[in-house]
Image (tube, rainbow, N blue to C red; front, side, top):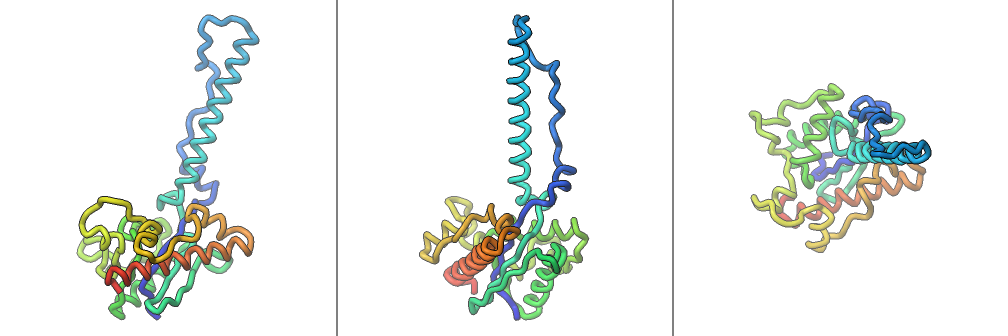
Length: 234
């Protein structure tokens, strides 16, 4: 069965791997504290404590930002799940579990691509030229997953199998808001039912949270399908 729309959800790599990639700031140096003309030991101690606490707070905030942004980069993030929807609205979601790792997900995606190419079926997504496809391709290189040669046609990114609803909507321009949720609302096609930034936590959470993650991704690919139909793509 060939599928026409897809969407990926990403998350951060394991913490130990992120720490390996993170460029941590130098350790706090008490000698860097400036006391001015203060000679009182108690005041100097309080000053030292204040400066050190501020430094540690800034370091913690920097690490928190690094982890929060990790899912946006193929060097610090992973593909957690991929949702697919056929033109008939049939959907399914594949994601990380006890039996499938990230390489399996990406390998399955490339198999979908090859099948769609054979069947002359387009694979449609929103903002896939700028995020989904580069992320999947770069993760393929990181994990040494074989990439079909037809993905890049004569050094042209990307194969004509892939159609980006964002590129179609922009009509060659880059002005105005054009996120999936915004466009779906503007065109009366529905709306997102959650926050993608929370997806990976939900996916790895309780049974109820995992089900919520599946509903979120399923809704996304259906929104893309409706948008693709409205734009005359499928």
